[in-house]
Image (cartoon, rainbow, N blue to C red; front, side):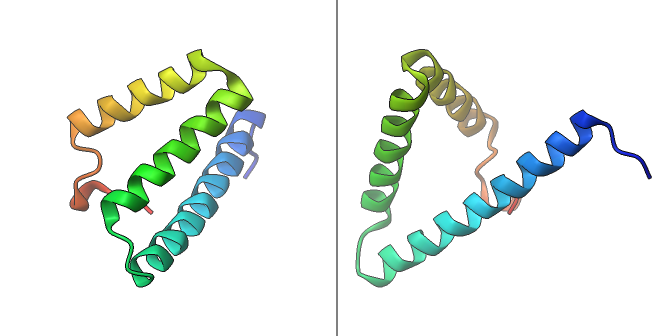
Length: 85
């Protein structure tokens, strides 16, 4: 089966996403195990993510990410039965 460049790019991006999810899940579990409340872990993760987005890509990119995440929350994408890992 032959894959086009876009297909290969999509596969690579998905593999990177899955690796990132795994890394973040491990960090989350470590934080919980250390007695850190989920709200504190979440806030620290979001602050880190948006800080890195601002440094790497600027305000427009960080705000676009925030908008995408807000839309996902509204759409229910983070409800337990809809989460994909």
